[in-house]
Image (tube, rainbow, N blue to C red; front, side):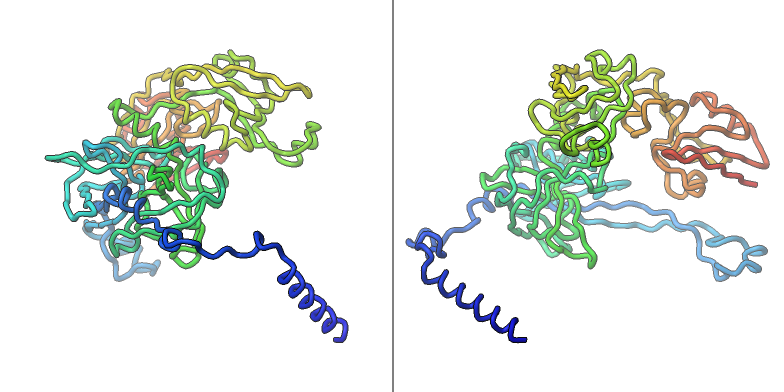
Length: 470
């Protein structure tokens, strides 16, 4: 006890001596003018707030009918399974935020805000409301682009900033409509600029901020102190449903790619490298004789790919793209995706202890075979699934790997037999009733043949599942 007491007195004495002897410059500085006292974010808010909108989405959800006997095996056997009877339709509404990015009423928001919506409406800060049409949705980045309908005059909008210029500690504002209470502005700092271990979208590269972000903020603006849009708020880490000071935003440089694709009127097209990679962990770094972990290790390269053409080989470690450090595979994917089609990307590569520079062409992945996108219908368990032929383009979109082939699922209609079978986007249909499936045309022919019993072989990632339906 005496030892602890003495230590306490010593610490107190040190604090007193430090306080007395500390230089004036190291002490907290008081405001020296009225201008410093009245420092405010108001000028930035006045510039940004008019361009942030509320996004209202309505969708029809199909539900099974209610069953009094649900959960009782005996009664379900005679009166039907859970939810027998006429399916019910229910209108579901969701509320999110969006950002106007051009004077003609182009709005960017999160795809999950408007997913499956039949009606979309935007409401401006000045209380004007407009119907909106979906121009483009990109599930890979969780972004969607809308256009205001019947606009009579130019809209206020935010210019996109350079998210790569952000640094940890920079001040930012989050603008949105949390919990539907109305437009709200919160302030904070950039906590991290390259969070890649966040499973929000396929491109896992996010700005982390402690500016309060809550449900309803999705799709709202993350604004820098120059009034430019540097990110689209997308998700939070929470245990309670509210903000815990850990929010994530999609960087503006990724948002720009999706907006440009919407202006071009097509699907988002991203460069294809054509190589399989894995993040260099501590164990891998030790086995390769590297000083520290980090980078993307090439494990395989398609012989016909831009990567192979540029000289990239298995065993190479990519450490930078165009001067930006690559810490992991997700970071590499982000750097390539934000470059767009055309030109080259300069890669810094470690090979056998030497550093090489390779220029990889930024080309679109080939669509061979053609995708032949088809919505399956009829009285079979795959009815309601949209399927495509797997090509390098499809494999890249769905993250299927270089060796993927056959027929893949891209979407499933809710409440259909395919939904009941629990098919998901990215599943590959390997076999149907013992027939190996190699094309959409073949799959249609097989499922159109009536059968009393169905056996499906589905590949999901590295797992192969067999489903039998009687």
